[in-house]
Length: 165
Image (cartoon, rainbow, N blue to C red; front, side, top):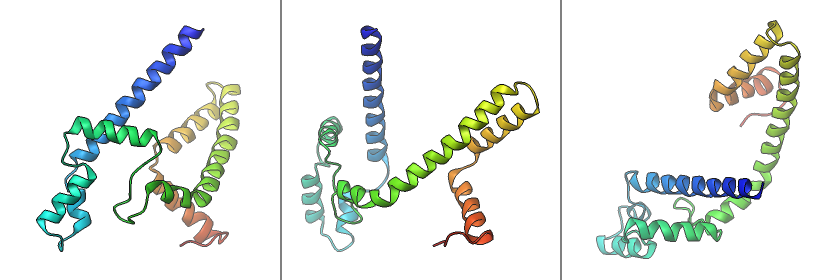
């Protein structure tokens, strides 16, 4: 059992390392220079180069990745280019609104999925099973922004239960 758990934890660590490398490379491949974006059109070439050096953008990609990963593991997620604040502070400041929404969404999901799954299991290969399958497939395949708009339309515009905007 211990070997199984150790293998699973090792596989999880490798998967997380691979995903972090993929995210890092995608961010670096995207067009645009963060230093030039921060400096704007007013910044001189020398000032932009100094900022690039300060941010570590002139180092080789493998070194940038190791430093980025080490900072992320310590909880230092860097600074926001848009707000010029630590990203960790921005996340923490938005948790009081985000956390209740996420918990409510999870509760709604569980309250919907468990009865639907039980109904489908007890009515296997009958009409109710197919209805449950169609509803669950629609729930998975509809884009979140579209279902969000439909929910706003239902609860705000049609029923008037909540304000929108």
